[in-house]
Length: 250
Image (tube, rainbow, N blue to C red; front, top):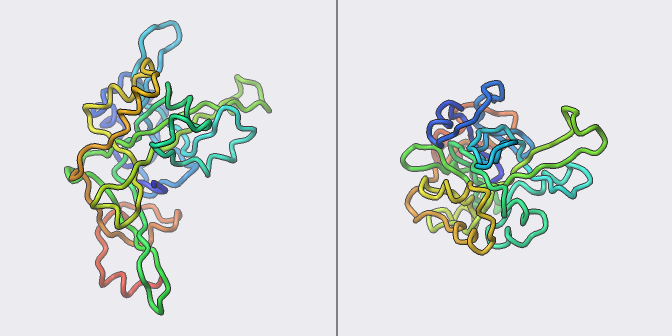
């Protein structure tokens, strides 16, 4: 699964790396090394601008936790931070977004917690930071959705909420001992197909739900400080030794 991630890449670099053609510099975010559900993040997507025919690749700031169009309130977002790749094409909350509103979440990496034995037989959670071995941003497959707040006029600043979820798949061999699932990440060769909203055949799209071959990722033990969303600093992604774990209170 994916419950926290780090996002510190400059938007200018995301624009270059992902071939973005439209981005409003006024729509920006501070770097964060501990992004949590319901917080905002940079997302790459393609939409057809009004009056045009072809989709344009854009960099947008969206909120994490998908709110379906039919939801009565945005409170469901905290339960929809992840969407399983094996059912995303049929689940009512995700199937419309899967058909035409797919996106990419560029992150430094994500955090995952492994359950390990602790003192007196009590289990504890050991955090890892999962990132690409080549140091480039990790392109997580996502879906986004528009939700209309009907308590205010549609042209009100709070009239619309745009949210996203991260697609997950079975963990590869390296990561399975940490957690049985992992975010579905994409290699550059599949960016165009995944983002193109004109591709809307669910069966065709399902063949894109295959993760790249194993070997592209590494898992680094990190400080348990990442468990608190109050902590947000570059050091959270740095290696944390076993000796440090033994002297830390959980």
